[in-house]
Image (cartoon, rainbow, N blue to C red; front, side, top):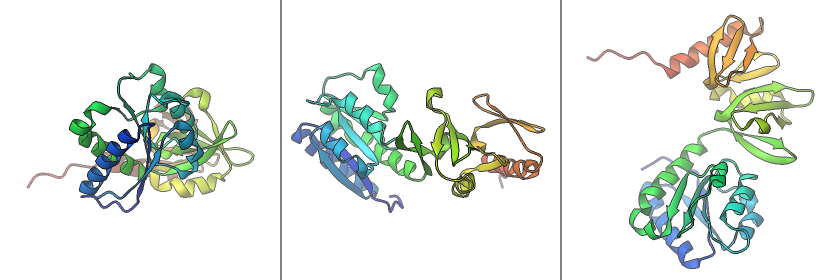
Amino acid sequence: MTDVEIELKIAVCDDSQADRNILGQLLRKTACDSGIPIHIMEYASGEELMEDILAEHDILFLDIQMDGMDGQETAFAFRSQNRKAVLAFVTGVAMPTPEMFKVYPYRYLLKQELLTKGKEDMSAILKEAVNRQKHVYVTAVYKGKMMQIDSDSILYISLKKRGCQIWSSREKEENPVNCNSRLADMYAALETQDFAYAHNSYIVNLKHVAKVEGNLLVLMDGTALSISRSRKEEFYQKFARYLGKKYPKKQPCV
């Protein structure tokens, strides 16, 4: 059992009512056994799903072969609006294409194996969605569209004239992403997620710090940032606490 209280919103998008029924029954049984509250929303086409995109689904089960918008087209449209949902492709015969990996699928499920192997997959998908609920997401704007970014993927956030800029481990062409929030407000929301001021102009995700030497820190992607004199003591203290939490001293066996 789990202590989950948040109801997971699950979208099942498939042009076959019979297949939607099978997925729904399997999901309800698995969720009940796991103690995870769920709400299932069914869509008969990619177009129907995208009309309801503001529902902010936590999980999407998506058929690859559909009339109109097929699974691949629907997945790209969905991901442009929802970055955090757990995506599972469901297929009868179609194999995934290399392009599909760009939408970060968590699972590929074969319809003919749902009744025999599906429960294990459903359990893993539900647990992944629960874990993602525990993460903190920030809202930003990319190419005129609102998007949500998992705080774990953020490298650092820098001050700009109005608001701030988010630099993440995403593709280079997707960096930086603009955010209207003040840097101080972003820090207030992310301090518990291991972010620290290294400079009055930027906060750094300590999870991505590879090396610290003197007044310089280097992130795991190679980005080098200076540590200001006024923030140096504070940054070193927070980095030391982070390392102590990540690598706790082993207690001797009694």
